[in-house]
Amino acid sequence: MDWMLYVRSFIRVVEEGSFTAAARHLNTTSSALSKRIYMLEKRIGVQLLKRTTRSLTLTEAGSVFYQRSQVQLQEWQSLVDETRSVNQVPAGLLRIGAPLATGAKFLVRYLDEFLRQYPQIKVKLVTTAPGQLPDLNLDIFISRELEQLNSLSFKSSLLFQHQPEFFASPRYLELFGEPKTLEQLKQHNVLIWGEQTSRDVTLSNGQHITLSGNLSTTNPEMLTQAARYGMGILFTGRTIITEELNRGELIHILPELSMETTNVFAYYPKLDFEHTRTRLFLDYLRECLKQENKEPT
Image 1: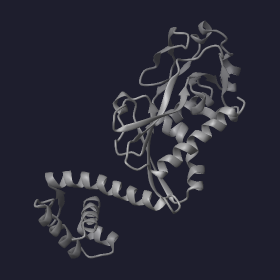
Image 2 (image 1 turned 45 degrees about the horizontal axis):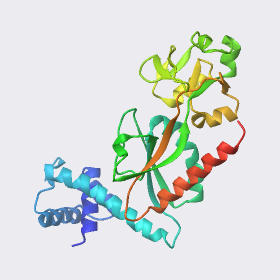
Image 3 (image 1 turned 45 degrees about the vertical axis):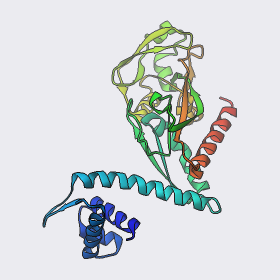
């Protein structure tokens, strides 16, 4: 019995929702697929699919088998890709995760050049909402420190330090002037990352302040766009808005004020073998950050 063929057939049938559609993708017949699923069920000893003339649904056992078999096939493919990469060009799927802001405004700008350097590597970028834990099947997850991932199962590698500062567009400064002190800042409209239109923050000197404004969002692109359009003052890390700073669309203000520094880590599973793709991406990312830090700001 060809386990790989039968399991892949089962997964495709579930994903397509019918034997006919799955057969079309696998270049075979519905009857051949039906026979494979029957043989798989017979070998395992449980029914995986409920079949009627109009529908196809997973049994409880089938649902468990579907979820676990997907993970196992991904791990097997990673092992195959990793083994091939020893003597060949690095290839395969690299699964990267990050909070939405990090993925949208930080990671994505590095991916194009990385994929050009390694054309046989593909990237799946998964973003998480604030406070949401990552999928543990990812190859890399880039985030501020997460206690839940500080375990025997994961390694952590420091990438950079995130220290939010204050920025505004030339248009905003022309319309409303540039605040020079903390007291003046409180009179300005501050764009807020989060669910509320005010936010308590701690400055690097330990002082606690409340920032507020007329716009809050958890969409990082929208927040940056609002700052570019002159809707308010943005507080974020330079790493997130490198392109806007280089183009002069945002300007650093209040240089004597900054937030508490937080560390940003790359988390990746501990494995008996090290994924070439993971190592290549982390080395590439560190080199990009190193070069950016060398450039004058």
